[in-house]
Amino acid sequence: MNDRAESAPGPDPEQAGRGPTGYGSGSFGPTGAGPVHPGPAGSAGTGPTEPEPSAGPESDGSGATGAQSPAGAVPDSGSGAGADTAAATAQGPAGPGRLWSVDEHLADILASVHPLEPIELQLPDAQGCVLVEDVTVPVALPPFDNSSMDGYAVRTADVSGATAEFPAVLTVIGDVAAGSGALPEVGPGEAARIMTGAPLPPGAEAVVPVEWTDGGSGGGAATMMSPAAAAGRDGASGEVRVFRSAEARAHVRPRGSDVQAGDLALKAGTVLGPPQIGLLAAIGRGRVRVRPRPRVVVLSTGSELVQPDEQLNEGQIYDSNSFALTAAAREAGAIAYRVGAVTDDAETLRATIEDQLIRADMVVTTGGVSVGAYDVVKEALSSVGDEDEPGSGIDFRTLAMQPGKPQGFGSIGPEHTPLLALPGNPVSSYVSFELFVRPAIRALMGRTDLHRPTVRARIEAERPLSSPAGRRQFLRATYDERTGTAAPVGGPGSHLVAALAQADALIVVPENTVSVEPGTEVDVILIG
Ligand SMILES: Nc1nc2c(c(=O)[nH]1)N[C@H]1C(S)=C(S)[C@@H](COP(=O)(O)OP(=O)(O)OC[C@H]3O[C@@H](n4cnc5c(N)ncnc54)[C@H](O)[C@@H]3O)O[C@H]1N2
Ligand code: MOO
Image (cartoon, rainbow, N blue to C red; front, side):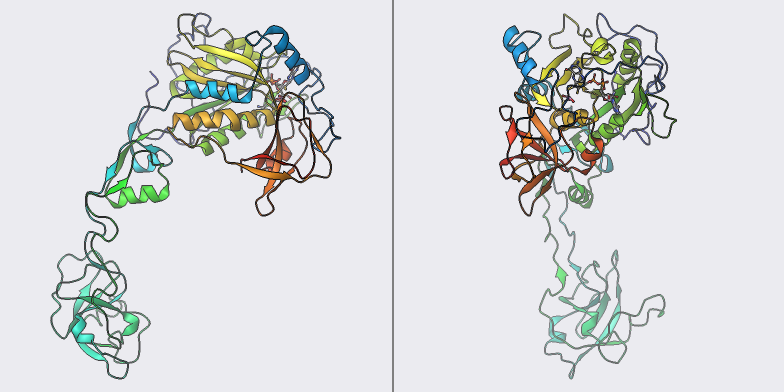
């Protein structure tokens, strides 16, 4: 179960509906989905069949108070930090009203996410993966002395003192091309025409570039060689005039000058980027042991959601979260599978997730985690844990942050696959992804650089920024490295996807700060 194919999955893994068919009908736990599946994963609920959730008063800071609202204006006018903090205080730290800090939530997630077991992968599939073995060099690079220029392989004594006026005249004994096996011996008074990368023939001590010679033409300095085919190998015989002397080993790349046999090419823990993949290929390694890229299944929930390109009817909106988060998961290093929106029906959602588990190292859902009557993720997953399995099940929490207040996290299914249930508001889900999912993906990959870089920057704004008391706020911004400033884009509203698309940074306003004056230095997370 949940076996990982060594090769990359089929084409376009992001495509909806690529879920496995015929997956066993076992349930998540005591209250898991029954054996009745709604259909292939991804096809479930792409059309809204449930009633629309009623639009309750919004408490997510999406009101008119933008980033430039007056000092002290708290955008979260609903059950914001005040209410949350009061509840937490009233009910104690472990009670249902407990407010969790961003750091606590992240720590809990990272404590339960472990690097995936290493596997052997073909080089192209290993890109972005963490190497788990020390790779040593089996043969020296370059494997033989070779020319760094197109020119003539010569004996240095023969060209000593050569000038344009008094050139050395050598007999050309043949061509040495890259890949040449049988090499001509260069004797006194002789030269072999040699191409870049070709082995230095025996007897030769240096290479003179063709530009230092007449190229066999009998005239002045050549700009290039006469093509072997076109010239009927003219130039590979006859005479060549050399206009300059050459030091021993000039334009020769010595065997082993890059790496020697037995050298450590790459050490365990290296992230395989393009140059590292190139080095492995150069030393002849076609397969390496790495931690695989995690397979992350992204599914959005909401009966109001319609896929792009489809007809938008009254009250419907396009599903943007599954696209944004699938792209973000891929960018974080995962193999991402996008599952289309699932309707607000707990059984459908449970069955869809169950269908996906076979190809998931992690599941990410969006929407349905708040307190609405149709908050399906909460309904479907609150009770999937197995009482006999410590740590199993999904825990729904209120976090002291904006956006991203409601969050779910836990593990699901027989393999205890981590599941993060993010809030549905598009900015909330994206910010939550950055803060929680991305580090978790990188932890699964065995990477040590889990987090985005954070810099200190001065706020560039016309008016003070307001932030809800008791919540760490993440304001979308553009960061200017040159001036060391960050300027908010859009306001704090969790629905502002257009502003999010302009942003490359998140301004972090601490929990105990309700107003930030322009010019103040703050932490800024670089997400671009
Ligand atoms: N009475 C309360 N209402 C709300 C509270 C609260 O504490 N009390 N919290 C608010 C906060 S904060 C957030 S965040 C949201 C989270 O709600 P859900 O996770 O249940 O998300 P939904 O209700 O499903 O959707 C919220 C919003 O986002 C839109 N959405 C959802 N999915 C997508 C998608 N895939 N692509 C684009 N847009 C999506 C959805 O249409 C809603 O507009 O709850 C607040 N309410
Ligand atoms: O502000 Mo909610 O906390 O929109 O994610």
